[in-house]
Length: 103
Image (cartoon, rainbow, N blue to C red):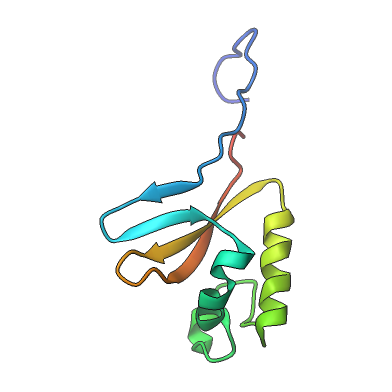
């Protein structure tokens, strides 16, 4: 245990962030329907192999495999997944997740 015990403490509810607007990019909750087409370019078979060196995932072969991967990601209840959107083009440039929230 780190620090003193806090009697009566109960964790709050986890929040859900659907959209964050920045100057050059927008962060949106990941959606298969909305983002898969753009993300196939980012995570598809034509991406440079060096992009995958430190990741547990390999490039996807096609849209069917990408949709399956995105659905697996979104089925996880211990993470929040987001798409990074270029405001100039409106295209999804990648994804990220927030993990271990509330731990």
